[in-house]
Image (cartoon, rainbow, N blue to C red; front, side):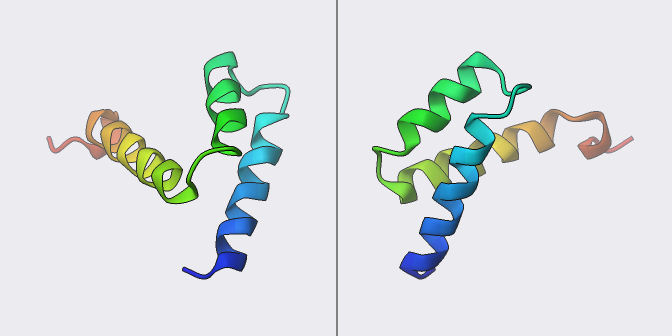
Length: 62
């Protein structure tokens, strides 16, 4: 990834943080991500997405 791509992702995360339906916990995480290493943030998001995929009804095998 290039710096511009990381900046674009950071902007999208900031936009998500200010949405009225964003939970308090996600809001806090997203706001803190602005001051953290973007690679760490992206890894955490990827890990959370993986966990959600594993436990979603659509992701389970019959």
